[in-house]
Image (cartoon, rainbow, N blue to C red):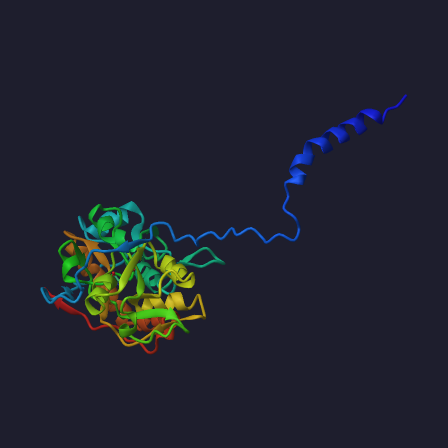
Length: 325
Ligand code: GLU
């Protein structure tokens, strides 16, 4: 009996099969292969060739909104009102972003969506339901906000949304609840300290935002790249695919918190007044939201929210509303 022989035969056969492969290995002292792949750009990043309008048009009195009436008691919304429909549905549908640190972002430990904009949304839900958590969040990119309101996909947009005359043709706005300033974000050692340094440079912004038109009007030679989200702009800045990001300081501060090598730079390029976006034809909801914002200011809650989320931006005060009847 020779039980080992078949095993030995298999080993020899396998070795014979592997031989040609082994002999094709390069010699140990040959140079390493040059397999340098391009760093991928975030999906959807494109260069913006068209010129957009600067958001500072004086074609309308952009910041004026509807005067709030007497606020109803929570859970007792006036019959046939937009708020009564929301109450009957059992939840307020809020469009926002979950990648805007400080304003609306997912807490990686608890999984909750938090931030200044979330606090505003919860104050609206509390005023309707007496419960800040009767909310469904629907995630929107910056470029989807107006269409989401027009399609009735959300009741309100609370996403660092600036009031402009152009947008007022498509949607309604509450009174402003926060004033931001457009600025620049760049690597600390990039030698960029002002808009003059952006001439001919690559600058990133999310699609569908006011920041693009304003930057184009100040630095016409800047080469704009647009992305779906602000986080994508940060990645492109970190990978050296753009030289700067430009948008509201409030958003840039949230990006800068995630990377000590980048910083918010230079003076304000212009003011951005954030308001709650509401579909046209719901004046009752506009007045109601303005009442909620009045309560946030008068009760001191606005200041508490500011101190909690935005104190890294320096001292902040609530904007004073202006109403038409
Ligand atoms: N405030 C700017 C706007 O409404 C940028 C905000 C954002 O991208 O969320 O267009």
